[in-house]
Length: 470
Image (cartoon, rainbow, N blue to C red; front, side, top):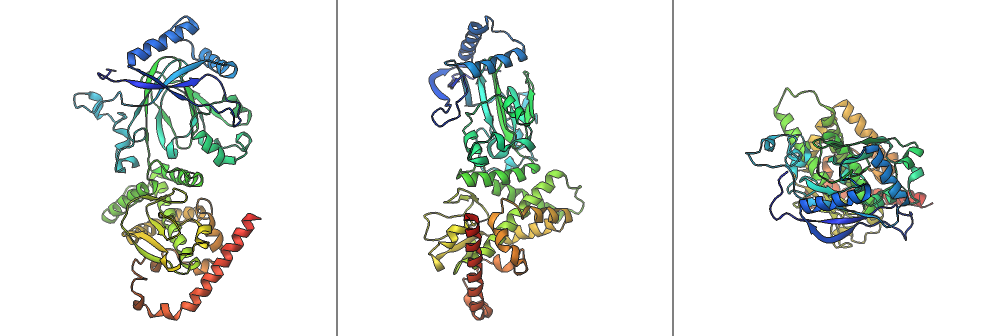
């Protein structure tokens, strides 16, 4: 790797010890003020390794693993440095470089035709653009999942939990899954893998050699440490089977009030509409892969949940006007959830909110000033969802998912009145229904019935909330 002239980076100082797992002893990785070139850091790293083991050469990986955890368990004041999230890449896009056109080039991999990240409007460093990680002996990256559960190419020696065993109540703090996720999201929590093994959580270990790639799958917790001086890089990507994980991550982020790293809803809708439009003009599509099925199910669930939310809101509030939505992606004022398909605006809040806040809706004092904004192409998106749902397998899995999280309170409210709700009801997709009150004479004649429906639905919601509080 040729070092770019003038390239320098700073490091973070990492303590070689474990935290005591209390509020007064949290591990922090402090930024060191010194800036290094690659060669300066390599020289420092090799000297540190020589002082510890009288050699800067390669030592057996099993020996270094024992040494690392012994230092972490018994160490007191030792520290190492790690160049984390350094802008740059060892790959080139120059046509003179034979790797520039390779699909394994980390600068182009996230933008390949089957990666959803190609649809991002702007590049995101460390997600759609690779970053460098420059380490020395025992430099570490702590237990974490990738942002929004994305796929990644990871570097160095890894220890990974399989995705279907990543949550175990026995090893989580009192705050539960969300509390653990919030702590682990800080990426400073390190503990030996034998703790997980003692709680029957499978752990897999890999040692990455120069020139090798390691792929981390969605929602897989992983950590690792360096065997000596090294320079690696990492980037994220997303194929169709990631979308269900993206939906789960979006729900988790909303519970914690964290702003999403990437616009999940926007990527999902754009990918689905590209497929829908290609399906409209192609008669001989190849058999759907798992990737396409996952994307279709996620898209239908998103559209159905928003439609059902509008149904509930129209009956739980005195008056909710449906209007066209011209903005792109915005974020909910209350939970930071992404609002690409729809959002709610009222005088009670300074900024728009998403459609999934039942308590706030009940306490809203706005009355007629409450407005639901929908995308201009909502009818086309619902047409795509209806087409996808004609497939029996898609419909069956959508119905199962809508009974579970992250679709939360809506199904609880609607469960006893499913006969009254019609999926994709066009009336809830009309953008001008309340702007032209004279167009529908039945609206006037049915006001009393609607008031009764709202009163009944409000009673149902309040009853459900009381049960949850009890």
